[in-house]
Amino acid sequence: MAKRSFARTGVKAKPVTVFVVIGIILIGLVLSVTGAKIPIPGQQELLHVYGAKDIRFGIDIRGGVEAVFEARDYEGTPSSEDIASARSVIALRMDNLQILDREITVDKNSGRILVRFPWRSDEADFNPEAALKELGEMARLTFKDPDGNIILEGNDVARSYAGVNPETNQPVVELELSAEGAEKFTEATGKLVGEIISIYMDDTVLSEPRVKTQITGNRAFIDGMADVQEAVDLAEKINAGALPFALQAISSSSISPTMGQDALAVMLQAGLIAFLLICVFMLVYYRLPGLVACFSLTGQVVGILLAISIPQQTLTLQGIAGIILSIGMGVDANVIISERIKEELKTGCSLQTALSNGFTRAFSSVLDGNVTVAIAAIALMIFGSGSMLSFGYSLLAGVILNGLTGVTASRLMIGSLSQYKKLENPWLYGRKGGQQNVPVL
Image (cartoon, rainbow, N blue to C red):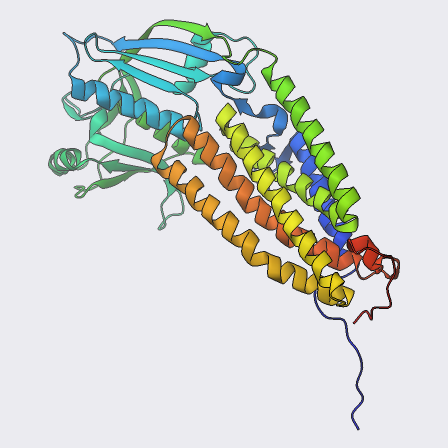
């Protein structure tokens, strides 16, 4: 007769797994508090990992800058179409800078644009005029032939970005032209093969590329860049000049935070107290799964902070609401899982079977809730703007991390802890009555 033996089933995890997961959470916690500068192999530059102290808060929390722009060297009042185009360019710049909390208001009668945006996270002098430099040059971009004739203007360039030439593996600046701009450029480059086309920002020359061949279609690239940084700088300047006319700031001033100077400290204090109370409840009511839940929730909070601070997303009051909502979903996920484990133990299942069934049967409920909220968050990010983007981004980041920490990390930690004999007592997992004569398979 073949030999038979009992084997453990259910949640598979090595005993040391719990320490690996906790170590990752603690490393993330340190990074979220202190930030870090990591060397990049082969380069002298350092990768700056921003921490929570570097988060850029919205106008409602930290205040910001208000500036009024008007057309420079422009006869008469700009048309409604040109004003709308200028507004769109400024909004696109702010999107690229992750400035989600902003107000851009146009006055079609006077042709002026009012812009409000928050201070940078590292702002120390709170100088409105210096802060405006973040938005880039508000000058007019032109492409000129050797005789000084204008070939293209800023609104003929849809966008510009740094790239790499696949044939030479060298950095280049790629241009995407509008339909009208592509037609103009095809005609001009056909006549100027071997000649130089100068790119101007007002009267300043940005670049002087030579035409190698006639360029057809709506794409072109500029080569001869010394390095990637030069390509990035030129692309950003070309994007900055995609305005239908040059703008100048006729006034700028500071904006006080609408929530008051101490609002952030109060929110942090309230959040910390609420988090500690939740952890105490989870420990008392669910015991070992409650302890695991505390670590998984810590990992979720740390991950959300890093997801906001590293790309320098603007965090507004609505964004904080998104964080709170996602953490609440994380608590809910841990409660569902812990309750399912308790119910399985009450039916007389072995510990490993109870853990396996608990996670498996709770997963569908947790997944359904996260997926529906994620769809709503993505919709807000696609169709929303300003503070709605902040809310949607925070909520989506929290939901994703809920799946990683509230389900995956919790499963690994509980599965790892259950491998230790001293932690096999069902009482530690919420069952009443202490150690029971239940086989551990």
